[in-house]
Image (cartoon, rainbow over all chains, first blue to last red):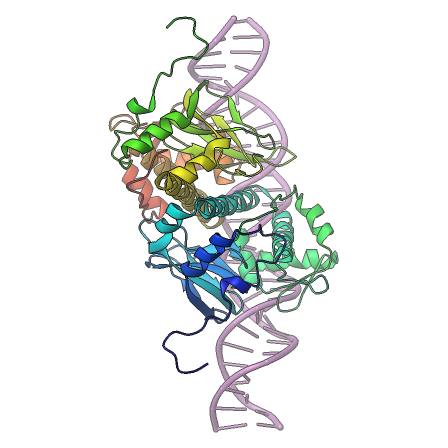
Length: 249
Length: 249
DNA sequence: CGACAAGTTGACGCACGTCAAGGCCGGTGG
DNA sequence: CCACCGGCCTTGACGTGCGTCAACTTGTCG
């Protein structure tokens, strides 16, 4: 706690709060050791902060340690599309790994804590730790699967199905990483976020969410509270989401 | 050409027809040698054939050598969403590399020639050829970028913008891999494909495409002929697509 | 010749967008 | 203390983009 040049990490990899979670696979000793050296620091951001900006160059990669965020793109006239949400264990900034130029932005939905890695050393990781390299590919293709599913939703589901699907999806993911306890099931988003995720207008989103609320599936009180996750899945024509044994970098 | 048990490959990696194209990066000798052993065979399929089926398990990975195809998902009631198109140089079947269970289907739009790889040996590639491993990750994140862009389109662009964007996008990609010569610019899709890509009905898609045709941007004659690529980009509010120096596996 | 796949067009209806107004709440400053 | 404000949610009225239904065309393959 002295006036050191190098700040101490609050969460060294050896005591990573995420790793014990059972959704993540076990690490080998030496992999853990390498990741510890790969980690450059921690970044804490407030709700509303833009972590990555479309069009900018980022020298870093991040792993989410805690909190919620979302990835999005903008059209020049301001229309916004939210692409996906980021939660603990997710890797951000991987895209454009060659050019380093971001094709999307990332914003914090709640206070977030991020592990910071140097993009330059990624090749070193690939050279010396094929297991970790494989994990990174795995994480990227998991992200792709989620995008596929979102695209199916936005393209082919009705407004009610889409909304139910989104909320059930966020609940499922959040449960896996203990962002949500069994008791309370609060998702920290506004209706504007839902609208921009589903490709709907704000007004219509509101009316759709009220329908879900009137069926006692959710409640809205500055954020979304899930009352009946199974009911949501039924409305959404949920067809399963198989993702156990994720790796964590 | 005798009655051998092992069929000769028509396109051994050493004489890969794709590699000379300038969109692909150069290969090291030993990388090429490994890929040659990694390649298990070639698969030729006719137009309309389902190469991969959602829900099935596939022991193979494929690289497209020639032809067009598309990836899609279905809802239980038959609604279809096309996720993306596959062209020469694209890797298919990467998703679900752990479970091997496909989350989407792939169908040929034209006769296709595919390189077949064994999924089981993927770890070997990661262990011995970090450069190739890095390439695979790069390919996966490029796919993700395309999906982001498609999601933006379907969620936030109007029908006319979406259609123009899609066609300009396919043209751009096809040009890069010489699927389309400078002279003719024919894309082998039906209006049903366009509809299922854009999340529109067939009828409305038809009316939208006729608008593009009446502006002399495209012509439709059993497949789409692009007349004015720049005009399409203007209508689509095209914002660039930066993808040079792709790797090829 | 019929059968079928793909494209075209018009009539009509609904899901969703847009506009507009107002309510609730916490924060800030007089 | 109240006044004011901005973020967020809510609701109604109205318009439109897109879906649905249905009929017809054209080309291709037997």
